[in-house]
Image 1 (cartoon, rainbow over the protein chains, first blue to last red):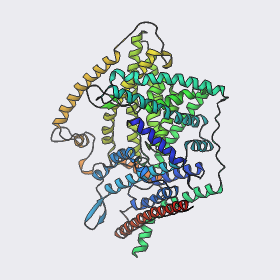
Image 2: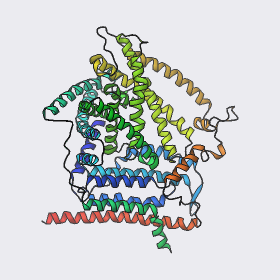
Image 3: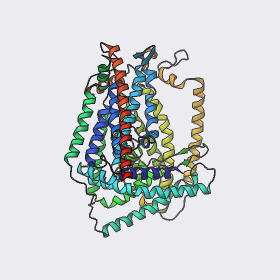
Length: 267
Length: 354
């Protein structure tokens, strides 16, 4: 399976997840989007040494995974893209920041190690949050919500149209790559003699296709206005979810829950 | 070069969103003024094509490795800077939403680092001046040379700017302890090579388009008749020779200085080169001006002052309770998972019973 086929499979998997039904799937997309953004902002705002303060933030995605019935492991496949860069940046911390912050028995833990772990957790947490948003919200509903949140029409329409064509184009290129590989066995990629023509051929064909597409859109009465999928109005349930989430995040941000619970147990 | 959420402080992410948002506003205004809304399907199809095209492996002759295309320069050369910019944004958004490449908060920064430089800086500072210049004459061969030159210079420059912005944003966010200078020294050369390859791929595609449909490429005057061939191959060979010469020169230098990074950071007084980056080996990193500035930024952004492990009065007590509490939080997380499983099983049973 080549890279494009893998990407296609990933896309259709996300689509299938978003089409399921659950309590979370049923919420208003704007509420989910705003809660996700607040979650990520709060997660990123933790101090780099505040590992114990950050830890309780894991509860929200885990709760959401459980309520929506989406398997946690589906998300970890995606970590392969995010983690390398985060790791590359974080891995230097233990070498440069050697002040001892913590002693467990005879083991000394430096500030760099703590800040590295905090950084990685931040990466994983924010990934889980945006993954959950997309796994419980179909793209058309998300676009409708973006319109409600005053994102420019041209950008939202472009996003919807592009998403539609990403499937078509990736499929086309996957077939082309497969055919090329079969005719060039043992060669790792596209030979320099075909660098221009490989993508160029498809580009020319697609540009013609785009013109026809626009003509057909006009014939069907397109007047630079798209009719988005109807989403129901923002209800009390959605407001409750949003405010509940935001309040919970703020509490976790302001009070070190882990230390509080630990203190209660120890004393 | 996609930045993840974790690499940014909220304030930096916000600033980058505002900057990118302004560029979006200006672009949309310009598109509306020129009544380019009919370009919409064209933009969508091109964006989808570039999205898929980024996954193609291009074999780099003589190296055994492969390169990729990023697309900012390509899109702005085909659609114009504003439409190209919006198309790049959509690509970045789809990558971030569906493939976790980048992040929701980092999207503003990623748009700036990859789309803004590639489309606006690359177009107005490189593409347009080169394509309009009369120095190369008006023959078809001259047009090809101009396209190759503009693509390579454009991709190298915009990638350098993007890489530098990644360093700047990460450093300002106070994420890494890596000194600013060392981080720059690490990022820029890597992206020089990437930019070169990307420029060549972009040039190859644009030349193909120019040969078959010159009217599709921005700022190009079609020339009838005559044929010119082999220009790209010539460029590749020239660059390969330069690379070999420069590369062997560098490796000689590197072998006489066993630890390149250390040399770059601290210098080596015994061997005759003292401060290369002005860093003192005894107190490296922690007291650089950038780190201080980043610390100040973070102090103003976080809505609670430090209450980390260090510095508190009863450090031991808080540490222990922190660890115990964390363990309990982990326990709660596991419990939630079990509860979820339990209820789902129950649901399934009820369904089968019915």
